[in-house]
Length: 424
Image (cartoon, rainbow, N blue to C red; front, side, top):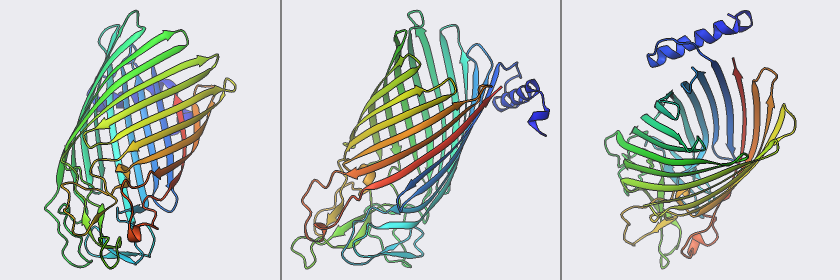
């Protein structure tokens, strides 16, 4: 059936009926239907490529009663760093399944070139008016991939005060995740064995639970200025280790080949993590344009501290065309248990990870988005961005083979996205 041969009202009624069936509600008149789709490509230089497709359906039943359904499909392929450091000698690593191996040439950062995953996710949320000043949003989500599954629920309430110039909000969410790594979860801090030999694996799957809470205030300062402030709390417990990351054990300074890796152990992270974040954002209209700036400070009980500064400028070139340049800066202090490597003969720590995402690092994102608004209200947006990430170097002094090795090579990535929204 072609939509062009169907009356808009008929399409709206059919979508509304389908939406109401999904939430067990009685079909009611719909004031507006909006359908969006977006495709994103994230490509790291010589590493991971992510292809993502998103779809959304938003049905507005009037009086701030809205149903939103989201779907996401992700495909990841390429080479992912396994956590080991470069070596002046060839390095052989066992694949996660334990049935094969791969070899890295001398001097290169070890990556697993068999990295591949697919994720399918969906969520539904229903916003309902609880009076002229209050809105509640209830939602549920589910995602699944080859070795991971997550089920979550969330709720949010927003209340307007002071002649609707101030909005107070509270959001809560809870998810329950199952981790079932390829080959089983490795025994933490156990030594990786050569391919073909039984690996030190525990019985799986593993589980974790995640709780998030957000308290926010949005304030209308004047006719052209809006300010938002949030405090976010996050707590996760259970299996938080990355089962595919290794830590190199290098020879000591007084050894024959100091700083040269000779074995690898599986990482181990704490069984819980609590994070806090303060977030502030301000928007100011400059005639038809809008300046949008934000700042976030995050800290947790793993020792991670981060600062994020972001600025956007919404430039309305004409009533139909718009441009939005974006610049984002991020800086992070490493987790307490992060280490580029361990040294042979030294006592093993309780927790250790060489995952670059937990290291001292900083990154830049620069992007430009083009927007086009069609006469009927539909919208097209295309975005192109560049991402660069650099490590801030090890806190200790590299020795031996480590002196001439780049333990945190620069990461460059290109981000492209195109989205289309149509409404009735």
